[in-house]
Amino acid sequence: MGSHEMLTIQGLGVSFDGFKAVDDLNFIVDRNELRVVIGPNGAGKTTLLDLICGKTKSTEGTIMFKTMDLTQMKEHAIVRAGVGRKFQTPSIYENLTVSENLEVSFPRGRTAFGALFFRRTQDVTERVKSVAEEVLLSDKLDQQAALLSHGQKQWLEIGMLLMQDPELLMLDEPVAGMTVNEREQTAELLNRISKNRSVIVIEHDMEFVRKIAHKVTVLHQGKVIAEGSMDKVTADPRVIEVYLGH
Image: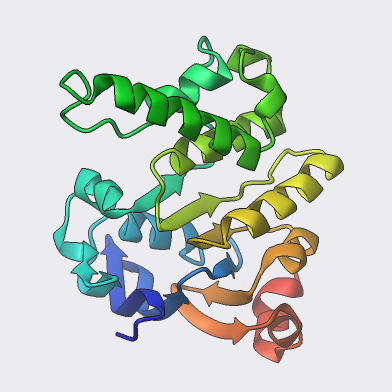
């Protein structure tokens, strides 16, 4: 695996009751790359993220994250190794403020109440500030999360993942239900956070994909059928047939 590769997946497969959800999949994501995965419903997109984060165990193949094979690791160990995953429904603490939501996401380690406590508190405060800025919520720190707009709740959840400073961040349909304005801001946000980490996004909104993707991977029936720039994959006859033609 080359030094610029963050994630290298080879021969990955998983079956559910004889149905191959992911079938001999090969997939490489570079450092600081923003990859978008598209494809029709049932193509295996969410299953792919489930396999990377350990929620689902593969039946064949390897998922190398830097030098670690994630297929051999438990979910919490994969998070600790530097993989963050945002699901479709936001899981924020509605009754806490934005600031508190970010604070509780800080990986304090075992020494939080030991000698490091005060220094860490300073760390936490600074981290909360910088992450809030990254996710466009600097002016909402004292607001209760329940009062945020749908888009802001999604940003807060991305912020909660960023508190852990993952090297690989995975987002499942981040702009679903957002306003046009929020979508544009989310595109800027993702372009910004992919400058120092790898990001994988599953998305259906083609206009949004065009704004963010460094490279697009098209899945169909658990296999990669095309990969490359947005222009390249949208011109691919197979992609048009199985996906864009619908």
